[in-house]
Figure 1: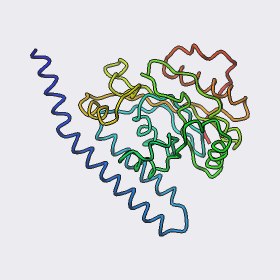
Figure 2: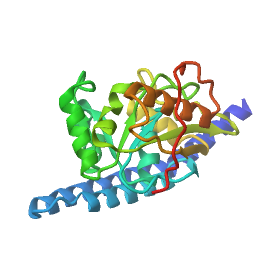
Figure 3: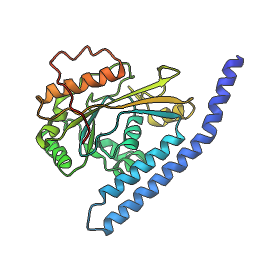
Length: 273
């Protein structure tokens, strides 16, 4: 009973300062997004680079307020890349975005979510309709973004997991890299607490965002292992072969069994530009 009371007090103490701090920082993010929208309306030139810098700065600030400690292995490649990552939580976006100047894909509904949708739009997120992921129009849009020098992040599993597996990477999502001749950089993410898989960070099934955030703000420190892996060249195989190679690289970096990868994988090429 004493242990349970102590645990509750610790959770309360963590939330006592984290909740107002995070609320304040989200408010700052909304003000920044409004300011950037105003500047863009007054400018004839796109302000993508400035917006990306501010988004990265804001995400790094948010990480300092959340109970996460990031251990980064490798470096995001310089130059334009299609980053292909496993997916565990909405935190993945913050973690990757704080370390690399990238744009994300998201389902169209997110754009209309209060606060989160506004921040996502301000960060340059590309929103897609349900069922559009395999459409040629979308692939052309993504390829055009890559050709314009905008690095993209794709969560190729199409859903989140508890971090105990890497699901099949969908090859159709990599077509834009082949069409635009853009290198693919696999990214691996794992959440740990006391050396064991963390159970708080995964955002799965029917989790609700506000409840998940509240649980996170009461958590002790979570260690995030972020791996930027070696490039795969877009001409080294078909989209399905490339997706299997990316999946294999991510599985190996996380030390997970790569049971679904059966086809030939390709030797990665160094990501140094």
